Image (cartoon, rainbow, N blue to C red; front, side, top):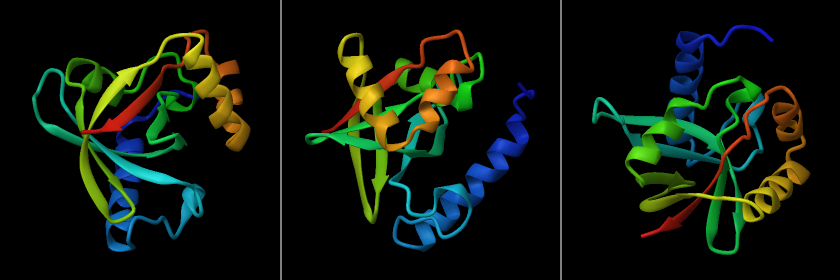
Length: 143
């Protein structure tokens, strides 16, 4: 697997965040066109600064489900460590912006939610196969 390029990923995400906000919560280019996309803003675990990350999601009833895949790389994404330390997050879904509480799921719920998202977005199965870590699944519940 290629080395994770933090700088390139940040530039890609920043462009996607701008596109999302300029187009009513939609991506108009790249791999996320027509994908259910949200913006997750976490508080830095060490810095205390806000960080915004675009992520695909699914729903489980009223809950929003996100997966900390980092494309199958061996480490968790920074946003996962941030919400673990500070579980109150801000979500932007479409044109709505609201606070939510993040909860890291455990099995069997984790597996059920992972499978449901992977059924819609099969790439998540590839990400899990590419790493030895168990990819975390997080539920977000509006406050």
